[in-house]
Length: 124
Image 1 (cartoon, rainbow, N blue to C red):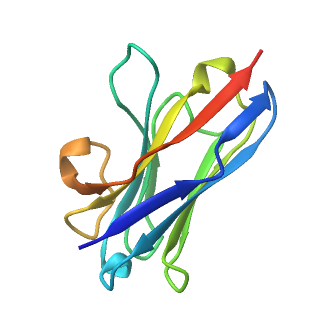
Image 2 (cartoon, rainbow, N blue to C red):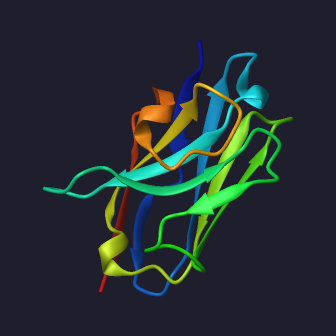
């Protein structure tokens, strides 16, 4: 069992930065791939970023490449999402997810644990 709690969301102006954190409980965190997804009002959940168990493999959604960075600290059971050059279209609820397995995955079906989400609002 893995429980995930996101933090770090908030209101920021366009061009600004935020860092999201996802704290995981459970002894199997370091064995799992992790991901970030987001969902804006009226839209489907969208893949943002993923990282494998050791942090050596990452992947990003096209809309965030070059602006967002995912990382993890297995000693702290935490995964991060550094978001730079934020745009109004980045406004969404951001969800952290833990995968069934240890790789990096861009599809939500690969994940079996989800956090409650944290709101990110970017004002233009």
